[in-house]
Length: 159
Image (tube, rainbow, N blue to C red; front, side, top):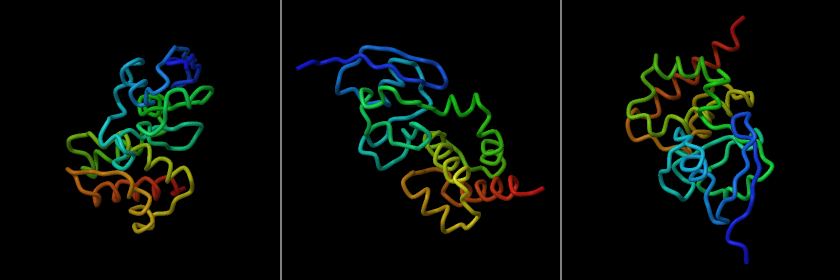
């Protein structure tokens, strides 16, 4: 049985080809092989959300996906979100509402928040909290994060 496989994928708009161990998690590949350290490794069980990235336009827990499963996929990390400025207003709102402190959960929170907002999510605080329920924050608390998301949703809806 092969212990490695060749993978080719798009990461933040760049084509990447590597030979990887078949059991290498996507988050470890992104961090260790590509140097994209914005996605964090937290629980390694998919429950904390610190490793959240976009795969083919949907958020996934990169600790639960193998790098070989991402073959042919389009991956966007927080670095890619930042470079595209898709999260410019969201980052500003997080700062303004003090929705980050240690920053460990922030990349995953931003990716999850963006998915909600771009998916047509409303400023309903209960719906926002439900959407963020898979992301843990142990510092700033969720109220500030919800406030920041509401501000962005309302700001994007304003004429």
